[in-house]
Length: 183
Image (cartoon, rainbow, N blue to C red; front, side):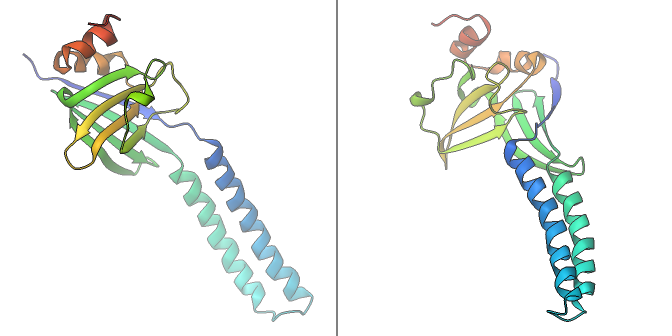
């Protein structure tokens, strides 16, 4: 059998929460320095607060850039032989490995549209999908971790990644996922 190396890059979509935080930061960057300048011009506080306002404005511009770039998140799935590696890439600069798991340990791998949540009591769930609400393209994987108990993964692999998992998965999972049959 030849070596298997498949990788896929998935860009996470910005959520409502991300947009809300970004707008809130912009409003704060505008409001705080403006308040200092207005108070300083009305002689309610010292004129030195104009310098503080200028410093806060420059810091705020950097903060806007920082928040926006750190909301640029991608997930990378790598299949190396029987091992699935999921990494998180932030702003195309920082990479953090989130999970390294042998796919033979999966107790279930199923499409998000047919997955039964009540069947599993997940102690930890790793979300590494482009859009959490996309049931058509997302898949759930359930596995048992020695220290944490039952854990789950929500991710959106393409056909190549799923195909590379196929030889290593449990036969019941293969029948259900690829042939749409229950044993």
